[in-house]
Image (cartoon, rainbow, N blue to C red; front, top):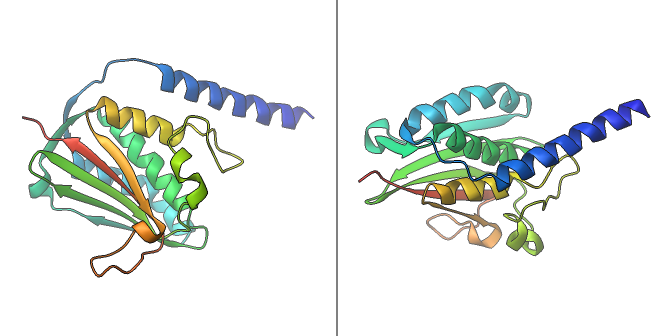
Length: 186
């Protein structure tokens, strides 16, 4: 019984922390962020777990084409980490997790894609809702916080999965791709 109580206290603490973070209105600590270095650091952090799960980590970006981005590096890293961990959870039998960065005229687009099971159609409209989760160990705050952080940066976040997630030839790809668009500094 004590073990169950300890586990539940930890879970409740995580839910409360998630709510506090979601409800907070703290200012962003924006500074120049080298996006390729931030992603490379994240890949090094994820590598041991990825190897254990037979997941290949791939990056697709040119350091010179990206430059720097004005952002809160801690919060942006949290968003990318959350998307990566969700993608890895969707690939219990292994697969590929890919980070792609495309510089656009007025924005930088970051894609985090996996070759996992995808997002079922009946829950797609709810995935950014606070406290919505399909995992028994989840708080349901991860994607809601991602959405909030990206909006605070003046950007947007969306996803493609299932029949929406296709390659250039129109072939449906396995998994899900989250796309973040962040404004470039003026």
